[in-house]
Structure formats: structure tokens, C-alpha cells
Length: 478
Image (cartoon, rainbow, N blue to C red; front, side):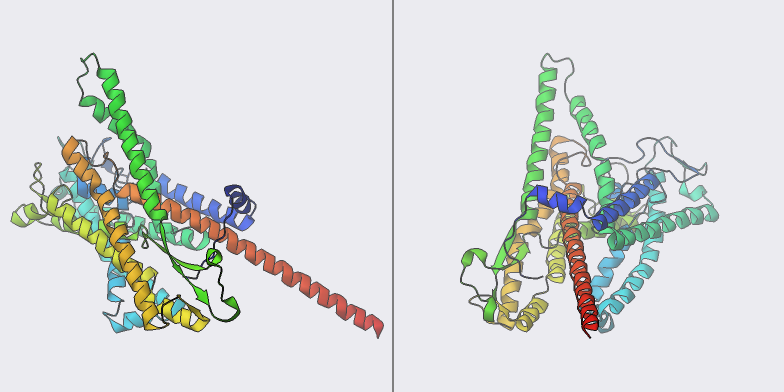
């Protein structure tokens, strides 16, 4: 991460740079087109599946988490019903194994573009078994969540009545959907703007905002006495409080994601400055890892529920997911133990991924090579320890805050009886805020980079023309 100086541009100037840049407009168009194609695919139910309007229980934390990672494709049992969840799980495993646990994989990380390409191939291979397992879990979950046989797959209302060929067909469609999602995400990352996988998840969350507000209003209204003389006033006040708290949580999340710890940087030689106001700095965000810890933790929390779908009724399945009659298991997000685990996973991934994003050892080496230093800190190991210390401190603020916002809906649901999918805060809100801010920064970065390349090309072209004129004049003189 390079040192940064204090430069400010007005919003009007930034927007002008973006919308007058053909390269950025093209990248935005590609991103919007692919996200729209993904959303259209997410609304089309797989042929052979009969699905009512509300197939899944809004209080089912496992189904809600799967739907979030699928970008909204699970609620309609579309070709993207599994989505990018298995790919995210595979990424977690590969990143853990490549952090000095397996030396060959660790060398791939340090092997530049070629090594990263090999790791990506390994990640996609590992994605396949997770995709098959999660696809079967989705089928079992769908049929087990119905009441009165309203849900059927190929005319059958029980998974035991489906033939092996029918199950294989469904799994093949879901696996294809996952790899199409990964493909779309890759194109967005390379040709568009922002992180493709995160934007696909974001698109599903954003599409559910208005329906969720509408459903929350209906839920609040249903819990009030409609015969009361103050019914309208109470309904308006309750709805207003709901919206107010939502906005307050949104503002707090934006504030934490935008907060930065600035480490002052000095440059040896002519770059040395005594002007404190214009001193360059190394920005370390309070939420240094971004939205990745929440997505990773959500993916990990789906693993026990996926395993439970393969188990017969018994103590093991009851321990993981409950008995299916309203009693929750110990590893679901509707229980205290599940929420504590989710909280811990988010905090751990915040520390883990922030050290991947901001590598103190690599930063220290770069500072030493470029002649930069932190005032009052020796170069080398002291600089590395100082950056690691600062990173650890900000993570102890950012990580627990993210975790608290993520578990807030389940706490609110327990207190108010509002379904957790409609309660305030949550994983979806964190992804909306963080992914939107990252997308905006990516757009600004693409605009700046493209503008720099255009300017450089013009200067080079002008220089070549001037040299050609000089050569022509010399020839004429001779």
C-alpha cells in the first residue's frame, strides 16, 4: 500500500472525470450488463420444480445464509440456487493452506501471476465437491421445509422418491450455475469495475431491500391491535422507529468503514519534508479487511447445516440443526452458541484477511527499498512490528463492530419476534455498505489510472511528432 498525501477533489470533478472517460464508461456498462444477466437468471426457477411464493421459512438462518451467498438465487430455486458459496469456501481453504502450512502452495503465492493462476485452478477444483454437497443440501432443505406437499420436484414431494437420474440432473444444473457465476464474477473483476463475486452477492441483497421493508411493515402491523383507536398512530410511530434505527445503524456502519488510521511517512533525500500538514501517510482502514470476513464467516456457518442435510434424524442432526419442529440446533444462528461462533469467526477472519491485504513484512521491505521511513521508528523489523501493532489495534475495533452488526438481526428477532431476515442490521447491510464503498473507490481508481494512461500516450505521441519534425528539418538543412 503506497503512502498517500492529502489531496481533495469535489464530487462534481470526480463525476466529470468518470463520465467523460470512455474506458470507465465501458467498464461500468460491462459490469451492469453482467450483473443484470445474473439477476435475470436468479429469478428463473429450474424446470420441474413447483415452488410457492414463500417456500423458505424467513426464520431459517441456514436458508437465509445460503440465499445471501447465492445472490438471491435460492429463494426462486434458480440455476444460481447454490451461487458462489462453494467457491468462497474453497477460497478460504486455499488461503489457509497457502499461508506457510503447505510450502509448495506458499511458494505459489510468492510466484507472481503464474503462481496465482495455479492457485485459482486449485480453488476451482476444490469448489466442485463443495458445490455437489451444497446442491444436494439445497434439494433436501427445500423438500423438508414444505407443508402439505405444496413443493414438488418432478412431481415428487420427498427426496427419497426422486430417482438417481433426477437428482443428478438437478445437481448438474446447480454445478453449472455455480461455475457460470464464477465466470461472470471473473469477467466483472477483469473487464469491469470492483470485485465480481462481491457484486453478484450485492445485487441479490439490493434487490430484496424494498420487499423486506414491505414485509417488515406488514409484520409490525400484524402485531398491533387493529381495533385500537390509536392503531394508525402506533403503526406510524413503530414504522418510523424501525426506519430511524435502520438509518442510524447504516450511518454507524458507513462511519466505521470510512474511518482510517493514518501512519505518517517520511522520504529520505529531497523528499524529506518538515511541513506536517502535507506529510504523506500510510492509510490503514478501521475495517482493513473490508467485507471479506463477513462473507467468509457466513460461508463457514453454512457447512454444519449442509452436513446436517445428509444425516438421518438423530442426536447428531438434532445437535447441528434441531429437530425440524421449531427446536433449533446448537450450530444455527437462532441460538446463542451459533451466534457466538459466528461472532468469533468474523473477528478471526478480520485479523487473518487484514494481514493478507496489508502485509507488514512486505510493507517494511518496500519502505526500506524506496527510502521511506516512519518518523521515530527504525527501518526493518521495528517498522514491521509497528505496522503490525497498529493493524492489530484497529482490528480490535473494526472486527467486533462488524460481528456485532452481523448478529444484531438475530438478537432483535429474539426480543421483538420480528423474523431475523427482516430485522435491523445484519450481514446484508454490512455487504451493502462495504461493497458499495469499495465499488466507488474502484471506479475512481479506474478513472484516475485510465486518465493517466491517456495523458502519457498523448505526451509520448507529441514527443514522437516533435522528434520527427526535428529529423525532417535536419534532412532539409543537409
